[in-house]
Figure (spheres, rainbow, N blue to C red):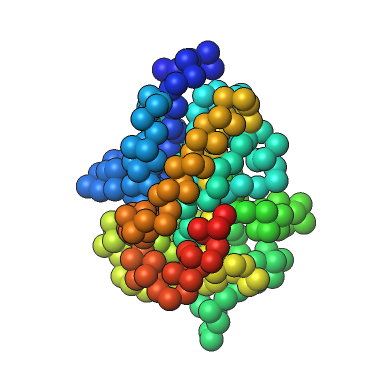
Length: 268
């Protein structure tokens, strides 16, 4: 990886994985993911540190944080489990919540949301997920319930878009992902607009927030404290909002999200 836990404290190693359109590390839109753009703003406002960006899998990033290495992630869900070995900043990103996604061979007439528990109880369908990914405490608690384990396929992947490929090929029946990831995948692969059926998850929030994550050490706490100062400055700006909505502009400028941005995101 080119670094170790004894590196001098003035360097932050930012770990990202290829998860378009949040982070894009290759191809036509390299560096133009909305988390990429947010990270650029954070780095600009933290000139007292040297910054190195490293490409890694989510599983490796979680492992390195547990090992207390000098790494940080620009956007991660703060779950109770992760808080045991990570320090989290104030909210760094806000965006639409996860959705249940089927391929177009499965129809649920007159429904715009589905119960995840009811789906997992149905032996007809297999849910495919990246085993290193978290969906927040509410969803994680459901999908890790041993009662449903036979209907969940856990997959090690460098990118959650791999699961959309598997879904499109019929290798899994459904997955959980963000609507902007589906849109990006369809655009990149020239797929029809109705290639996937997307449903809200019953009982889930409309929007979610993520935070910068650093190891739960004295070093990590210092980095988070400095990042919080920067976030207080950046988040109310138009430039931050524009970067955040880069790949989902329509919803990012909707009345619902603007209210959420002002009433929730800016206060967390």
